Structures are given as structure tokens and as C-alpha cells.
Image (cartoon, rainbow, N blue to C red; front, side, top):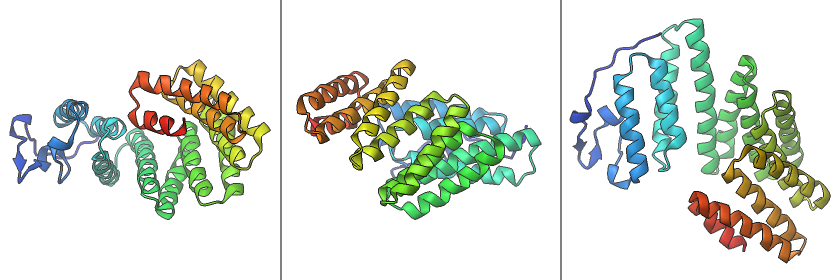
Length: 274
């Protein structure tokens, strides 16, 4: 356990200053509660109550991870950068070997997420910078599942910028790593990404092979969001082959699942495909 001092703030004292939520309690600046959904408010209330009562910093780091991974509003970005700095500061306090390893795993996750932030902002150079830092940590610690995920993210940057050969190398490397540790979710994701590359290259035989392999694994895992994504890709595959009846079949299957799980953005995208 490695502790740092914290001036406690009770939930009752968490007020608002100039329309913004109190940063002393909510941890980040310029946060307006009125912009949050009911689900995000519930997430923050339960997480921050636990955060401020936590006796060790490992717990605090994990709570912040939960916020970053589950908040729907873009305010998650503020919490991600807060956690990133929090972890870096803790690493300067000379933690025990076990605590340091846990912090480094969390740091790798934070670096990957920051890479995603820059990726979403179309800043590929900065995204790759953070992804590469995450990869270095994961390789050193032997965190192969995390490594496979980050490599897939890196490959998408190269793919987006037209560097197809490099993207194929990275996606294939990620697939190999996931295979080594039987990381089914990572295997399915890499197969899906490889299928997309081959689809854009009009290599329809390989594209269909990879998409169907990905779908089969996701069906076994029961991950509805990923199943709907795989169905959508198969719809696009048949669309490019001008097999419109088959394309419609897969898009409608994808739409049905997206409606079941309330994926509004996915619903909109699938209607667009239809």
C-alpha cells in the first residue's frame, strides 16, 4: 500500500462554483453536471463517494479506470488525463515492487486511452506516440492481452493513413499474440480488422473468411455489440459485391441487435447502410 496525503472533501460539500461542479470533489475542472445523462451522474456519484473514502491509492486508480471506461459523455477525457497524471505522480513516491507493477499496468491502459483520444481527434502522430509508449510497457510486463489491443489501435492509424502493408503486419502480429494466450476477444477483433483491410483491397475471398471467423468467435462469446459489428461488416462485404439481398439480410440482423442493446449511434450507422 502506498499512500499520499489528501484533503478530504465530503459529498455534502461538493457544490458548484460559477455553474461548474466543485473541482475539489469532482477532481476535474469545468465539469457541468447538467450536461450529463442520468447514468453518467449515477456513475460519478457512486465512484467519487468510493474514491474519497478509499484508504489506498491503488483503489483510487481502479475507480478512475472505471469512470474512464464507462462514462458516455466526453468528460471521460478529463478523467483520463487526471488519472494519467495521478499515476505518474504515484510512481515518483517509490512504491513497492508489487504496487509499481500494478501502477505500470494502469499507466499502459491510460496511455492507450489517450492514444484513442488523439485518434478520435484525427491526430494520428500523437496517437501513435502514446500507443507506442503503451506497447513498450506491455512488452516489458508481458501483458499480452493489453498489447494485442494496443497493436490493433496502432494498425488502425496506419490503415487510416493509407499505409496498408504496415497495417497488415501489425494486425497479424496482434492476432498472433492473441492466439498465444487464447484471448478470444482479441482474436475476433484482429480477424475483423484484417477482413476490413482485405475488403477494401477487393480480396473478397479473404475478407469473407476473416469476417465469418470473427463473427463465429463473437457469437460464442455472446458479445452483442461486437456481434452486431461483425454482421454489419458482412453486410458491407455483400454490398460491395452488389449482392444487395444478402447485404440487407446482414444489416437487418445487425440493426435488430443494436436496437436490443440501445446502441443509438450504431442504429444510425446501420440505417445509413440500409
